[in-house]
Length: 174
Image (cartoon, rainbow, N blue to C red; front, side, top):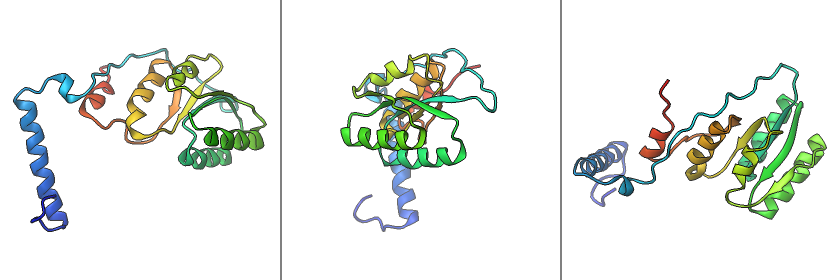
């Protein structure tokens, strides 16, 4: 916000309107797609498999920070008919904490992946039915679309996307 605009809701909305108008003007005068950000495409994958009410669901977890830990704890309260086949996180402290949590709760020893593109290896696994994705917002669209393309059920949080191109990539014509 500019220095002379009061810090009020009305002032915030006025500054937001100016920013939106400037952004629209930049689009209208011909910003190239490269200037707007990467172009993502949506690929529909196979239909995720269906489960009976009492079927065991084999999960993979991508992102093992504090948010994952909270959501996983709540998931365990709702349903213990889970297995965790794989976890993905570059930080060893997150991996160690997750291995302990999963081991204590489910007695599983998931395979550990640490590389920046290893989530794709996990999505390609046939023994993974669903994926919990709890990563920073800027990674959401790429990973959500990859899970969709792999035909996996997935849990993800908002926002789905943070740029216009990402939002367009998430739109599917039926």
